[in-house]
Length: 229
Image (cartoon, rainbow, N blue to C red):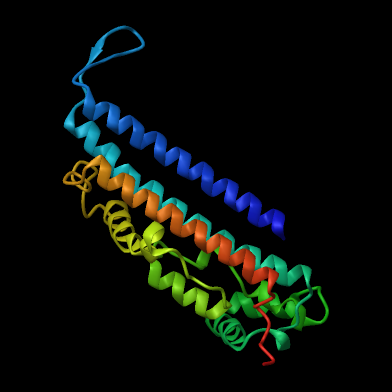
């Protein structure tokens, strides 16, 4: 499962590079009155263009947050699947969550009953899990901590580098406001400097990297099993 974590780390680094490229462009746009286009025409960057690009950073950051956390949970379930982990051996909080999913989703009941894997105890965690329903545009630090409490992985991080994920609350709000049309792209980040956005992006990605590292330790330590201590 180390390879799955490695690919997740690679994907997160790619997202960091994409966000950094937009931030670098913003610095160039704010630092120059005019640019030469590919056709050698003089182009003047407008405040609307700059503010729209600033707002897009929030969508890119939220994309990184939700994609990373979703894949972290997928990796856990893949690990349980590869270990043929029995329901009876799982930590109490995860067993409770599995029953909640069965109670909430009729399809989950059908999937459990119709599973071609025997015994059901080894497949119930996977058949009741739908990754598209794990997060629905509302993920922030509190939501991550809630999910961590269910699965049993740590959320500790270096506050100086991550602010313990405090940036996620604002990112979630801005993303939802933009997605639902409550605010337009010209105004969402209008009052923020590129420096503000760079710091927010750095702290956010650092926090996600810490969570991924914690997931790797969680899997190595088999912390998804009920403690016998």
